[in-house]
Length: 124
Image (tube, rainbow, N blue to C red):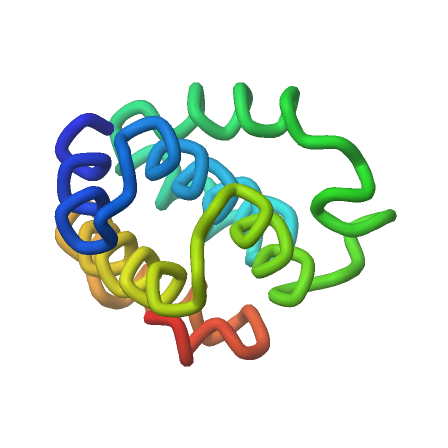
């Protein structure tokens, strides 16, 4: 996870703590909104992702990611804004996170996840 955090901080200008939180929010979102099998494979391919999701989920209230799983990308954008990211940083985060995911898990798997989550393609 340290390599990914370093890449995100370089791409966004965020500090490491904020970058880590943002990565956790995106991965938690994918786990809730994405195809379970594929997201599980992605999480397994990203060192430290499981632990980050667990710590993010325990620190995030039910309304933060949308009640009963609703909210989609808008809820995620709200969470990322709350964590201190602007739209440009969100886009840089998405591009860098998914580039890293492609390196670790492969283009096909990442493509399946992106294709299954409405609107996600514009951030990768």
